[in-house]
Length: 186
Image 1: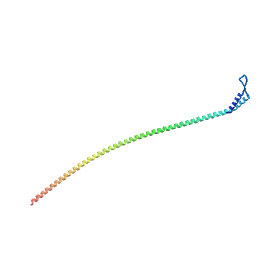
Image 2: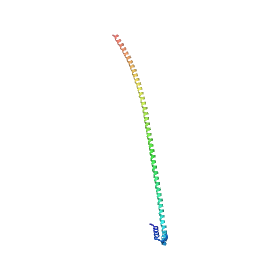
Image 3: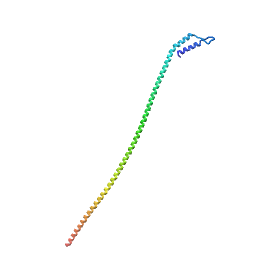
Image 4: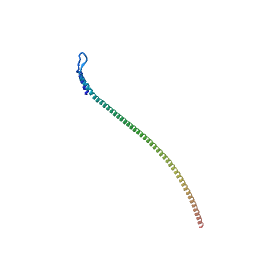
């Protein structure tokens, strides 16, 4: 309880102790006592007013600091939220870009495999065609050579046969000639 509260209670006590004046609504009070209490109230009021003002100022300062701290906390939370959103957006963008790169790489890989298969198929077809042509050419040359060898052999055998026939004919003629000479000489 403050001094002012005590002094106000004292003032109430003085008024409660006042004597009623008969046939009126008025009371007789100890004026000196009331003046002393009022003077004490006046003397105490500036001190208590100062204390109240100091308390109000302190309260206002505390409220301002609390508001400032709350604003700082809110600003920091908002900044952190923006950072988290930005990081999340960066992460999502990076994931989307990675997915796109992976899809392109898969597509390019499939195209390269398809192109390689097509090239291998073309090379195999060309090689098969060339091999078939070479086999056909070799078979044709082989037939031609075999025909030439057979013709040469036939020609050679005919020549040998003719030569043998002529030689045999000559031998027979000579032999007949020798036989004729021997018969004539006998």
